Length: 68
Image (cartoon, rainbow, N blue to C red; front, side, top):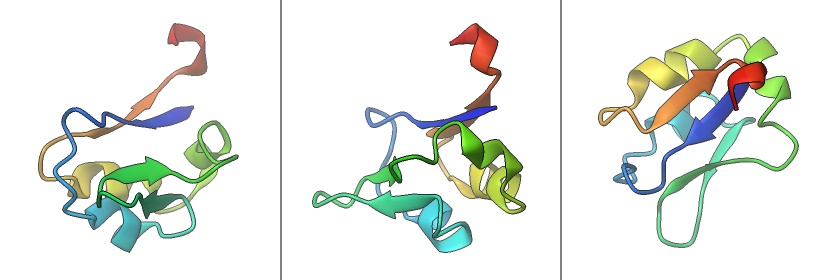
């Protein structure tokens, strides 16, 4: 699994960073981003699916690595 944040869609609500702070952070503009080294290993994180659901604009997604 791979987790991604669509920066064009992100509004900086920060729900992903609040839900899974060891996977997500917010950049200087307040937009969410995946912490370095967590994009592909994040699928194993216990709160990752909840962080995806918590995004109010659907900017956070999980994909199969094979499809990227």
